[in-house]
Length: 231
Image 1 (cartoon, rainbow, N blue to C red):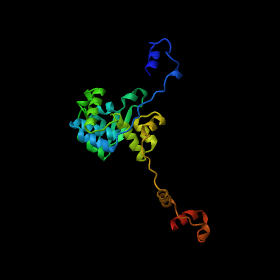
Image 2: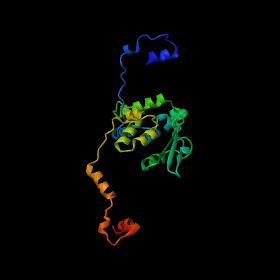
Image 3: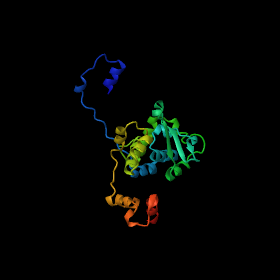
């Protein structure tokens, strides 16, 4: 990666080695935070604003920067919506997100300031400082292999497991392609409901059909309507 960046910046006049000679890049596997881990993290957090910050990441799936910069003006209590801007996608015109405020999210928001920034202290910290603090909290909770970004992976996995339509989850997280979104949700447990569940739904939707010959007294154009009423 650094070699390619050096070529792009003009720091190297020609490649050091041919592209096919370089060893294949192996990325560290990423995963989402589980509900159990999230509970331990919140319980291990000693500062209330950080505990609420982690809970908001869990409920929204937003990036740490976007959530840290939320203000009370982002909350519309009339329409029960949380609006915020995704800074990473703002230049593409895809930065706006709107999330319906459910009971759990409402409980968290009601504990935050009613005016001004929701996280006055945390928003002033850089991403590295927030990440460093999270790492220390995870150490206290004896949790490894996750970062603040894992909350986004966790949200995608939970959405997939819960049966949320992929297009809706993809739009909320701001993923521009299905490939990226599926990479986030690939560890999700997908449970298939029994066939009888879908058969029962089908049976409830079907209407009893009465052939016309079984209703000799019904004639003319109103046959179907009359049969439907008689059923």
